Image (cartoon, rainbow, N blue to C red; front, side, top):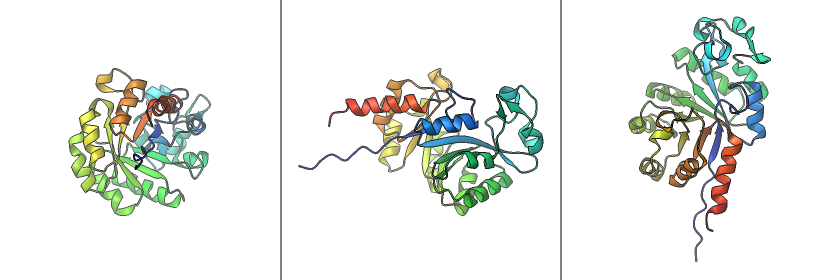
Length: 250
């Protein structure tokens, strides 16, 4: 009697690093994500006025550092002097590469999709010697542009799941859904078409902040076909999914 096919492992993506316990997009959050066994470390990427790629979710430093500087109009040297909790408020991409082992998979949430920013990021990724990188892109033209120059995987951080067909046609690999959009029907349809789908937990109708989750909802989405989760606490998320595996009959 044939055995049922093994369930593929679910990837745990540390949202802005281990941001449940450390400042987001910081070396401490990156180190902690690795120690927690995260499959990917997610970082937000922007470009300074003088063309340096830095790790920051927001367009300015108001929330992180209580300062007015906008990243796109500030030089890298000026940003480097702004420190929060003993570390640069906006670490550079070079610092990220120096911190994470070369074998550590990384997801870039590319917040700045200007052509010149994409050019620099694709070039830096290609020169890094890393082969487990994922470009998280928000616009279909960016997907087409990056696919033409890179073999790295592309995650679709799209405004609407209705753009899925255009995303895959443009060369995208993995579709991201917000948890509010990750219905059982939609997850099953995407997974059934052979495309991987990751879910960013929280936000929107969930009433939770981005990256926070309920264990029961996490297990439901995994059972429905989600193959990855962006979460703030990768350690607890892994434990929640491991419990599901332990409870699933052989």
